[in-house]
View 1: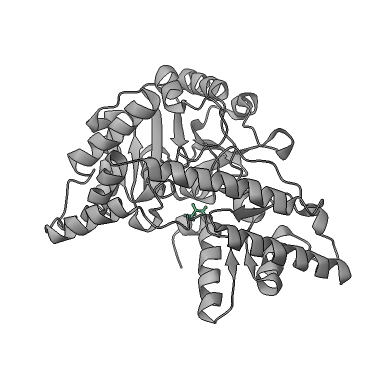
View 2: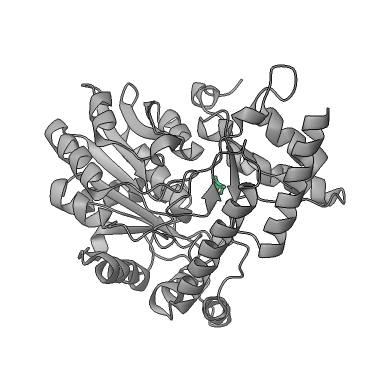
Length: 394
Ligand code: GLU
């Protein structure tokens, strides 16, 4: 009935939880939602004011497909300030969230028969975009024993003559793991020899808690100046998920290819959002530091709260806003058999939403977002522990 492309791809497992929570809440069920990967903070007031001004001034028409020049300059400026790397405006396209940046890249770069290496556990859209482009995703597994580190050796071993690209997400969703500069350097070096691309998803780049070197844009520029893509977003660090603003940065010819894709899909990011984005990028940044500090405290709080249950084994993440514990010790053949069953029962009986590891190609785990208030995290933990106690009694 539908295209083969659709038959190959799966719906977003992360968005499914958001829809399910919405459905239950509409029925009046009181849910603590640690499912969605979405800040609970309001968009900063100065950013909202810029959008209101845009509407009032009538800045409500089409803009250039890649975004207004001021926005693309502001994106370049951010990378110059944060990483000391100088990008030009013709190396940037503004997109409807980081997701469209990655989608454009998949459409612009991958063909049927190509292999695209990525890492698992990982964000589902990366894999599904590869499939929608007709290519094959090849997952390199990372493990909790060493903090879900992506080892360059494992990626290098996955290269074949069909490898077209490596997609790396750091800090990673759902693990929060950071890719080490030296690992990325080796991956980029191999890609350079091989004629492959490296696509780097930096959507959580401002939410890093460890003091680890993370100048990944510079690493790519040094090792792979002609075939790199850096994508980013304002969704997470400026609490702007609904505004839909991200970007892709890459060689000018790649940006032209993205322009072709986007020009036939959505055209420009909403003009009003673009004005808000310019303010977010160029205005005061203390709001980002405050949110980062709050996330760090929440991470530590939730780790402590989960620590009360020794059968939940959890790595301390270096970035993003998720915990990704292994709950397999709580599963059993005659009870909850899978982490998907666990998440389903926790939602139904415990009224806590989490995302099952299956969504990230990691059965046995669940993802808890700590982009929630302290009270919500405490309540979630209370409900989770009560749920587990009831499982033990059953
Ligand atoms: N990226 C967020 C998450 O992982 C939002 C949902 C999505 O777009 O996948 O929950």
